[in-house]
Length: 93
Image: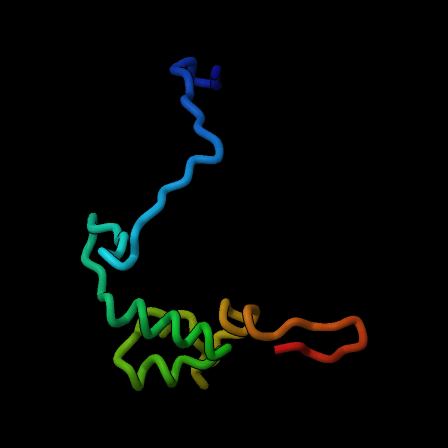
């Protein structure tokens, strides 16, 4: 396919990679990954948290830079995953 540089572009649509998770976990290894931190961050997301205190208590500091002085991050991933607003102003968890 043509592009602005004239070098051409190869496009692949709908490509899927499948992994047998009972055998291994597909993790990029081009950089060091703190696996316990990844799991902890995911659990924090699933809890619907927006405060970094739980992360800090579990030695996970990746979100500290964006937290305010009280540790709040606002409506980050976990909050959005767990709090679905309804037209009448309620929230569904």
